[in-house]
Length: 408
Image (tube, rainbow, N blue to C red):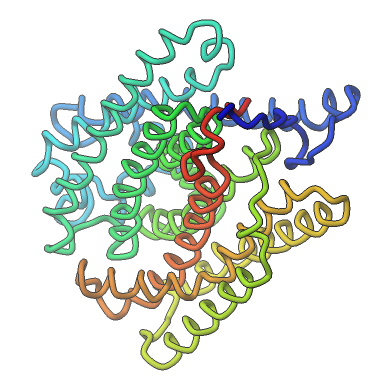
């Protein structure tokens, strides 16, 4: 049987399945692309040296990162109470790091190398004109990712049982989730490229690199909120990480859909799929109302709702608007994407139930923090699962009749 021929998708604004006029593609699309590139490059240039030299100070009292934070925010934020440095109460987080120095030193070095390599890997000239270099750099990136995964799990295995993770149980859960999501998306990316599904490989690697950038993005929030809010690093880090959970997935979604389109899938657009997602969400809400933990929003409840509320409303509004616009113009490929992401948010309460049991039974998180973890984790998990379902459902990985198709 000859391979089925599928037209190559156009790259356009928000996944629109039509050819973009040249004038438009050179306008908004180019500005969007350049803005994202400048932001990511700036974060990598800023953060990589701070991470690479984190343990170079032999006294472990003031590394380059601490000095930069002292200048950009304040000495109190960098070295005072809640800073996690040696000058903090009982040595703060640094004592735990030094207890796991081999793992953490490897973590900071591998992380620095990974974010630099990842930035280079998305260069299309390197991908298509120098594929051999692209593959070798990809193997080095994989080695760094596995080192980061091992070091993260090693640190968490030591610090979680003794409740010594910076910013408490909620941040411990977020770190644990990242240490699973990173190798998972890496494994999916490798599986996709082994099956010559370049488009799916790209999707998984964009999300993987977004997870790699979680630390640089966190530092940007430290600087911004540290100056505007005036809270300690401990508090700023907690609510910044809560914001980053859904943001990293959503940022990957908007970046990919602005540049690439994928095939439609009738199962994802079937009304029954929406009914299942809605029913799952409602059942999750009902279960949490009856059996769920009490919720207090952490030490700063208003900050929790500001970290999650506006972006959740924004994502749902954008997903809905883009889905309706795609359906109106008969663009089922774009409609498939946006309706799937919608369903991910709608079903979030169901994922919150899973998060609750993982946090309570597996990580022994305190009841005081369990409500915060359940809500924030459910939203992030819902978005993440919708991303994964969409990629697999529109890939050549689950449909052998489309194995010959290569996405641009």
